[in-house]
Image (tube, rainbow, N blue to C red; front, side, top):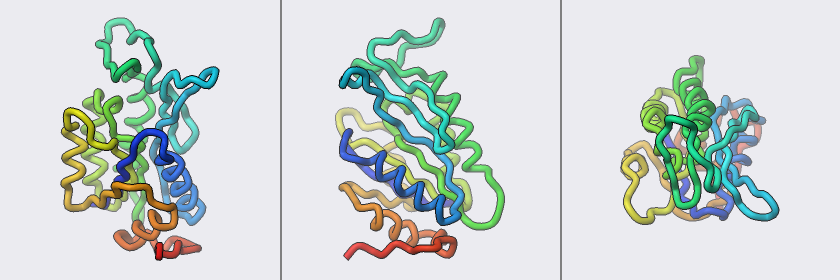
Length: 198
C-alpha cells in the first residue's frame, strides 16, 4: 500500500498550479512522476470547458459547454458542462494503469487532479483510482472538491482512508513537499530537500 496526499480546494484558488509545481520539483529531483491534471479552457475571456492534460504533455477534452455526447453515448452533465468520457478515459486510464504497475526500486508519484464530479462519471476511472491508491510503492498526489450537495462516494472513501493525509486549506509548495518527505521514503532521492513551514 502506498500513501496519498489529497488537497481540498474550491475552483480557482491555485490547486492545479500547486500540483504542477510539486510535480516539476519532484521530477527535477529524479523522482518518477506520472499523472494528469485538469485545466480550464477559455475563449474570449469566457470559460467554455475543461481539458485533461497528462504530465507528458498529451491533452484531450474533459468537458465543454452545451456540447453533445458522442452518438450512442449517454449524456454526462455537470451544470452547463457535458463530459466527454471517451476522451477523458483515453488519456487518464493508461496513466493510472502505468503509475500503479510500474516496477523498480523506490517509490513513485502519481498525480490525480482531480477526483471530482466530472471524472467520477467513469466507472473504469473509479476502479483505476482505487487500484492506484492501493498499489505498493505508489504515492498519490491528488485533489478533491470541497463538499457540496450530495456526497461523492469515492471522495468520501478517500477522505476516510488511514493512508491518506487531507489538506483542507491552501498550502505552500514547500509545506506540500515537506509533508510528502515526512510520510514517505521519497526524500533520499531529492537533491534539495524543502524546508518545513515555520
